[in-house]
Image 1 (cartoon, rainbow over the protein chains, first blue to last red):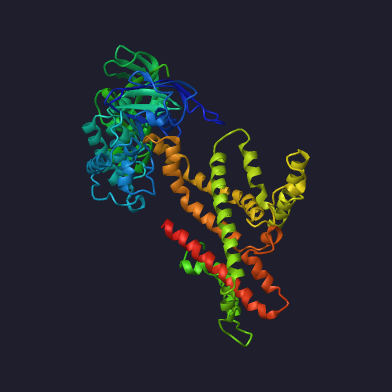
Image 2: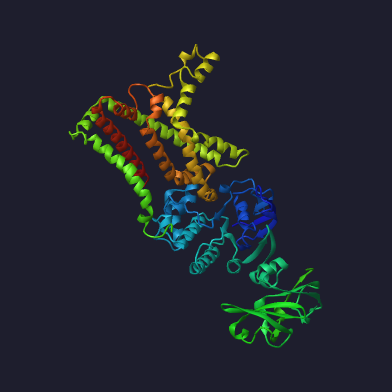
Length: 345
Length: 276
């Protein structure tokens, strides 16, 4: 298995205004599954292609186990990229597709047949070896693409949005399969996704990439509840930002004095809390607000309320939201553990 | 509304044109080859044509022209497309220059080949001027020659951009990802091209090659201008019989034309069947 280090990568595509990679640095530990999360166009796929050796960066380093691999062509990097669309070879059947890499390594035919059969068994497609890609469903095609990569036992597995072309049911299945195979094989894996839930479920850690650089790395929960800056908070759906000052475990703002969780940053800044963390009723950090608008969003209702010149949004289940009608005063509790300060914002 | 209703209904306008213009011509040609409309219908024209050595020699020459032109056009067109898909300074201009002779009519192109390659042409005079040969007459016969080099040169010159254009469009729709996937799985650049890109391009290459083959096998204006007088290419023979003052030769002209269509269809079908 391989430890991956990206060091200060820069890349600007010809004719592009913005850099695709802007001082991108990242470390993926040996055997770790890291989810590289970000919106479309933030440079995630470009980063994967640079790691795979399909694109050369303008500057920076890509190291496998501390050794630079920038001079190595893709076929000698021991990093296999699984494309978003699977990219199965249409003129080959499933067996030939899965055995392609082994054939390139000039392995004996018997060994290829054995390892292909094992790989197909791993992805539960042992009976479909004779089929052509167009005879497979989307989920089956992705599993073949995964088997084609895993059969090579690469040092580094790069998955580019492996679930994006699948429907909700298949996504769950495939997510579980990827997780199980990664645990079983221990292959260092970098999985790119734009889906926050997918990143949180798949990755041991999540790296959030915005505008070609990493903004924050940590567990899914940390990124979700303890964003490093305003952009991270906004990416994760944060919409409540209250200016004020943090000092000695409390935050002074227009809403009054609010108790903060332990280790909250100190100084001038912005208090943020997720809309679904707000609870109706009395208690610590309870504030009075006037309901401006309510909007039904399926399982949850979004309530916009205003107080002391500040506007807050809450997402509540139907029962909790029932009492909120525009123009009415309500009491909301801002739970201490859900609050976080973005210093200097 | 486009795309709605029964597919045959949507295809009907195009099918009508094909059925009337092409199907009608084919039926009339076939009827003419059996002497229909002349009072003495029968297989006489076919028997005469198939038992004539000149027809077989012409068929052999036409097959040589068509196979050689198609093979060379495919190989050179493929190579050119592979080069032109890469990004390089002046790529736009190179593509424009590559495609430009698609707009030149065949007859004009054939005259250009004549001016360039014949024994009184530009290359012959240039070679003589450079002292490479004693005089223009010493230049090898590349037009009106027994190997139909001038004809093949013309078809290759004209069809390479056609093949290249079809393959470039195909490669554009495939993108770089199939080759990138192969490289990531351990294939060298050449291996990725040979094992992945070329098989993916094969259907388009066969289709484009079939069009080139059908055209170079069945067209008569270029062999008339650049070919030798005996044996002539099969389409030239059909044209000569058709314009013969003796109207009794017309059924033979039709039979030769039908023979061209039949051989072409059988060979193209065989190429597609091999692919499947």
